[in-house]
Amino acid sequence: MSPRMSPRPTTGPAARRSAPRARIGPDDLRRTFEAVPVRTSAEGEPFADSWWGRAWVDALESLSMDEARLARGRAYADDGQVAAITVTPGRVVAYVHGSRARPYRAELRLRTFADPGWEALLDAVAERPGHLSALLAKEMPHSLARTAEEAGVRLLPAADDLDPSCTCPDHGRPCKHVAALCFQTALLLDSDPFVLLLMRGRGERELLDALARRNAEHSARERPAAPAMPSVAAGEAFAARFLPPLPAPRPVPPHPGQPPSYPDLPGARDPLGLDALATDAVARAHALLTTGRDPLAGLTAWQDAVRLAAARPTAGLTATTRALYRELAYATGRTTTDLARAVAAWRQGEAEGLAALETPWDPPAGPFDRARPALAAAGFPRFTPWRNHLTHPAGSLQLRFGQDMRWYGYESDPGADDWWPRAAPDPDPVSALEALLAGDSVPDTAGDDDPHYVR
Image (spheres, rainbow, N blue to C red):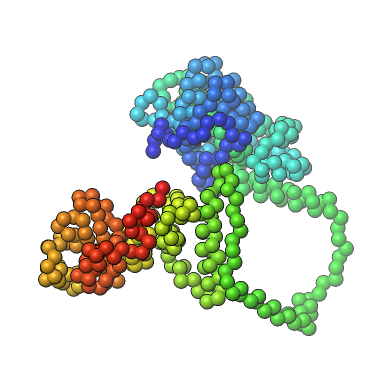
């Protein structure tokens, strides 16, 4: 999806915008943030929420003498035309989509701190533990910026700190593409002030390790020395000691417990779906405690989602079933119709039935080759083969040969190519087709109670 087509989020400023997902380089000195989606900002509304994010925007605005370029850059940022942003020491880079099809490479350079400046800043921060707590909470208090200035370093940039460049033909300083990059960078700073510290030259892990060492040294200097204790050889200390036996394990309860009730909170997952998932987890845990094995451990995430949905009755389309289908479909990236079709296949033959639905294969010579003559001998018309499928010439019935050597019946509206599992599988293709024609449907998936009506 191009930045111009990103989904538009809920409008209005948030108390703290969630940070875009970032990839962090192995050396902690390179962070790449995903593109920020389209947003709507009212005229006169600050682009950033935090005071340090707004200070970044102020530095941009003081750098530019052209309000029209800044307004155009803000519109580009609002429209999601800034692609992924990469931050390294002293540099911020992104591709920005302008009026042409090919995006421009926008770059902003920022002065980094020399080692003496970093040492002075880290010493000053270590003297006030509240600064470290604020950074860990992704906050930058005003007092931290003042402490940095007292140590001789300026965390927040001024206009003379910023050096913009772009591959576009506009010689503005900055051009609208760099302005858009600057506005989006303010959103990154809003959510994580460590991005600013990375621009100044050091990564988050390196800074936290250095501050932890300084805090430990500071605590050691303030703590009075403990009196020396006489040393004892380890062999002497444990020669006459015996570890007590471990206590007996607690008895396994006779029945699985009940999960807690989940409240229906705004923005939270559906409580009925959570209750169904928690109930299943409790039952599996109880089975593992009583038998020492989990027979479902080999299932994939999709197979387990289908199994969970198939365990719920669909007759009547209860609210719990609807909620569970929505939750499982969302978690696996499928639609509720995909899930309902897979549930019908699971009720046909569990994992083998799901494989018959989703995985065409080329059977070896044998039962599959004998199926068409057997169907013809029983008076059925000539079926069309494709891989492990045999399709009725009218296009409404189909048999699929599973890798468990059973035949699975499917039905579709003629010409729709919308196949649904219908009948129980059978090793004999004639019996499987007769069951399909007789309407021997998979339990709990027939008529108006079909789970593909779940919305």
